[in-house]
Image (cartoon, rainbow, N blue to C red):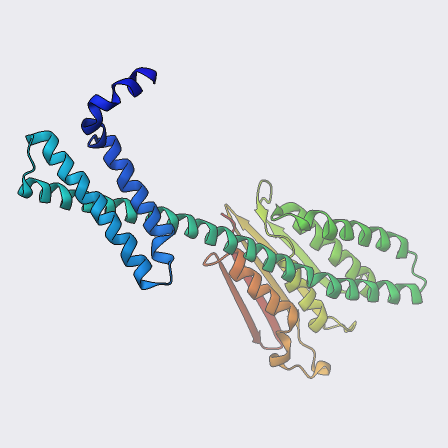
Length: 307
């Protein structure tokens, strides 16, 4: 460093017109233009600084022409000037591109965080509705002094643990989600009696597969809410789960009793609306939800690609 400083006065022309010095000047000008000069409000401020930068670049071009030819050649100086202007704009656009890329990354990250927050909000809206139904079941059992009340409370406790702990994760094991549904159905069977026509069938292997929590339970709750709210001999709820590779097919069918004065426009309430929103957020273009009302049977079929 000491030797370089000592020899600098003799090599000042080479130093000022070296590639490293030129690129440093271009980068500084591009940086100042992008972050400061073009953000000035006054027109004359911008114009003054831009003219100053042009003069600096022109001087560099003249010095480089003098260093190479030992005399200033205007044609060669102009060639260097246009080359330097082009490199300055190149650095300017490079800085702009990097900033745009950084902005895009921050935007995508913000969008991701917003989607997570939306999903969590929609998920949390399920809890009060589920608890309302579960405590209604316990209330009905307590009025009958059912001996199965303690076991039902224990099941409900396990479900509450799943709601508060496991379901807080972004994804849960599919086997745990199906276990949660199984316990929910067990409570409903206790509520309506062992003779109630409630079936829950699983085909395929759920091991090693993950799913967003509390999606499937909405269709199950909906079936009991609209198809099994009274213990009628003709009432039924059938749930079939088919698992193949990385795809799950969840089919729920329930009876529609004449006593209900069923109205299909009222069926898609808060629960199904939340389900549709969550599916759009969590499985875009990877799910298919079909809702059908046919021959006194309501059918909800949800197919999800778990990959």
